[in-house]
Length: 231
Image 1 (cartoon, rainbow, N blue to C red):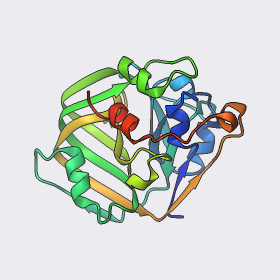
Image 2 (tube, one colour):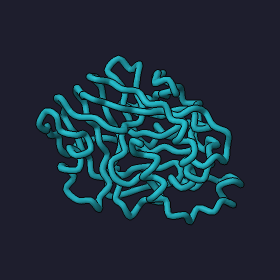
Image 3 (cartoon, one colour):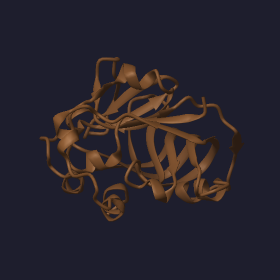
């Protein structure tokens, strides 16, 4: 089915709800490509080829089993509709934006190749209820002058900003499956960009007291602009 799956809305994460409400096994039943985080915001999640990796706050990646838990993940069963290449030196987000047919559609993205000037980040494990915008101030960043690997994630329309991260949201895993993180910036040296359009979005609403009593009506766009981008 052409559908993305969200384990919870992004606004819950912004509000500091870091309890794992789904397992990695749950997530992998819904899709084989995607991203997210782990219980207590313990690192970045990369889902690639039906397997999941955790990138810690030192930038080290390790594969996790199905029992690991997540408060937020987004996945899709990936089958490329289009595969394109762009000129060397093109910014990664610029490359994706230039290939998106419509800003009002959701797309799964897989970019495989060699990148330059790559900057990624991860975050340390957190106590519950610390707002994500505050956690972002503790992020650790990692620079790769040149790196081979895969970026995976989603392009999400702006009107879904309370549900998922709007625009281009990508996580990186190197070819050795040893390093990675949340993409902040970088350029393409040589890579294939595969896109899949997703006309459906399925989302779980966690049945926890914290979620059911939280005030999630906030306007998340300004906070996400700080959290998701460099600086």
